[in-house]
Image (cartoon, rainbow, N blue to C red; front, side, top):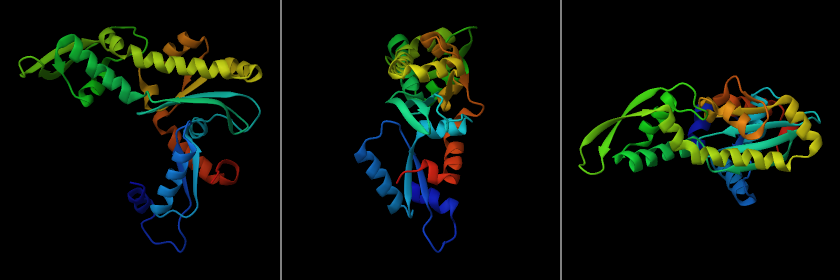
Length: 251
């Protein structure tokens, strides 16, 4: 995969191998880090750097992480949610949980199977999540989903509303909320004051889930802001970090 994208971004043959910066989860192990570095070299990279996604997401969201003040980022991706408090370009406290947008989709699939004896696919679940899903439900909306009846094996349709989808997503949302609280609990008091003043920045595709800002605010008591372009924050941050490799990257 890396080789494919490398060829797309560098279609010609430069005299030297390109320098790579690869985004990795916050809780990556030393073994996993070495594996990513090796994969980058085998894909055709010269010098390969890795940088944690919360740092890149914060850069892409426009946060000033160079100074001594504290900033908190919650990056809700497809497979993981990375949470970190940043100061002086470093992660002061951080955690990762393997719960993200995919886990929300899986939870909807299981809920529909359990409550309605209907088997739906993950893409159908994701469409329902986008259409009527909410982390903090307000107005009620409905969406029709189609699947295969668990008993008869025949196609069948049901109508899901906002509260049903919210009920389906409660467990993975609770895990994300607990992870956010655990990082706040480990944050030094002087940085915690900065976070209370500035609020928590949410990035990643999960930031598009309706009501996620109010949900996290209710769970933590801290103001929450959604990045202007949450899906692109890590990519934008990687571009910024590439231009400042001397300050950010570690081989």
